[in-house]
Structure formats: C-alpha cells, structure tokens
Length: 261
Image (spheres, rainbow, N blue to C red):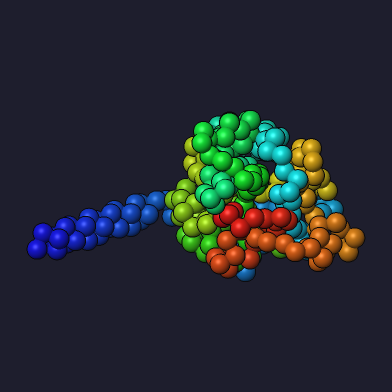
C-alpha cells in the first residue's frame, strides 16, 4: 500500500512540474514561428556580396587517429567566437580503455588545457582523443522542437540560430543528442558551433580547422569535385556519432572507436 502511495505522489509531482513548465513557456514573449520553407531566407553573411549559398554544401571530417589533445582548436574557437567562460562550441574528450574493457572519459575545461594524469590503478590498454561539436544534422531534433523557428538550416547544410528570434527556452539544448548547445549567460539565447559561418562564407576555414597543428580537423565543400573532404567521404570508411539517432550528421569521423558515443 505504501508503495502505491509513493507512486501516486510521484505522479502528482511530475504533473505539477509539467504544468509549471507549460506555464513558463506560456509566459515567454511571443514571437511568430517561421515556416520551414522560409528558414533559408533568414540572416545571410555580410561583407561578401559575391557569395552564393546555392553553390555550396559543406561537410566536416575529424581524424581521431591524428588528434593529440592539444586543445588549440578549443582555444581558437573561444577567441574567434567570443565563447563565454565555462561553455564550449567545440571540445575534446579523452578516452582511456583498461585491459578489462572499462572506459574512462574526461574533458577538463573542454580539453582547452592539458589533460591530467591517468587515474591511479587504471591499467590503460589504449587511449585516444575525440574532438566534438555540433554535427549540423540533416534530420535535426533542435530545429524540430524550436517553438519560434529560431533554429534553422541553410541551403549549404549549416545549422544556425537566429538570436533575434530565440527566446532562450532551452528546448533545443535538451533535444540535441550530442550536447552541443547551451544558453549563453550574457545574451540569454541558444548558442552552438556555426562552423564559423562568418569565415566560411568568405572562403576561410573554421577557426578550429586552421588552428589544428596535425590536420585532424578538415572542412570542405562536397559540391566541389576536387575538394579533399569530398574525396574522403566518397572513398573512406567513415562513422558518425550515435547513428541510431537517425539525425544524419554532416560531421564524419575517421578511426572512430566503438567506445565513443
């Protein structure tokens, strides 16, 4: 009997939490949602009048066999995009696998600074680094849950956030299976990796790609026949994070181990 009472209390508690959440959203300032067919008409790059987004389709490749965990990519991203302290648009995780198959994952300060020593008594059989960021998916949960159309995908395959429309509800943050979004504590709007949209539309690589000293990060245009990234996607065995989510990421990995999620 006591067990049933507890279940009833839990049910009532969850119902109250849901009602409170619904009330909160109802109190948020209303902004008209944008129809899906109009999202590509949202803010476009400035300073390059000759840029035609219909001529491009971008993709990203990360070679985990090359990454040395130096964190230069994270630092470059922070400086380029003015990322607030304690938050990351891109980060690097260290994976350590013991002889018994146990897995330890850490990312101190997003991998921006040096990684600490291996855990005492943890006999490592292999270890490696995995850079992560927004996967710029084709089937995007973040766009689907946005109540005001602030999250959208451009024709070049880049997922962006219109900060003028974003109400900071955080739905997209919760929906992203890769943990790549956060609410900026200063602007109170959703923020994420944009592949440095302001750079790539001027023919420049993302800041993280330019900063990588070993070429572990690669950015390209799959509409260009001679593009190295296009060739890698066409000829190499690539993997994506959490393929069971069916998000169809545009971020691909070389040498991705089975322990990575």
